[in-house]
Length: 135
Image (cartoon, rainbow, N blue to C red):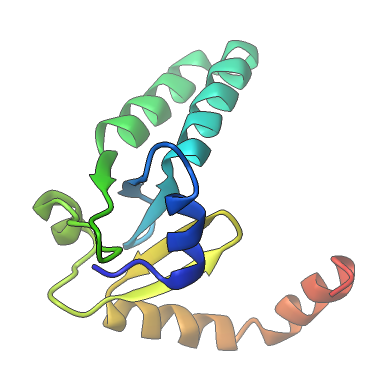
């Protein structure tokens, strides 16, 4: 899969030119540049110590990290997503890549269309969120 230009630049400008891909809980994958993944690991360790429900936290951590896979970026700015993750996200060739700040999501075109249709019904809530964020 080709990594979009802005994310490719962010990844290539770091000492570890790779991304960590994992499941996001919905039928998509989420990819973090390696340096962002390291920050997430640090934050989850710090906050986990403060977690009220240790069992729930450990279950989350086990699932989140067990499904994660580091993917090297090749010279053409591509990554090879493991079959288990492609299957989990129902990726069969084409993919929709959606950038979200410091990470990007990888969707099957069919699931992305469903997401977009669901979001169309939330137009008022999305507009309100933009207003609250000063956008």
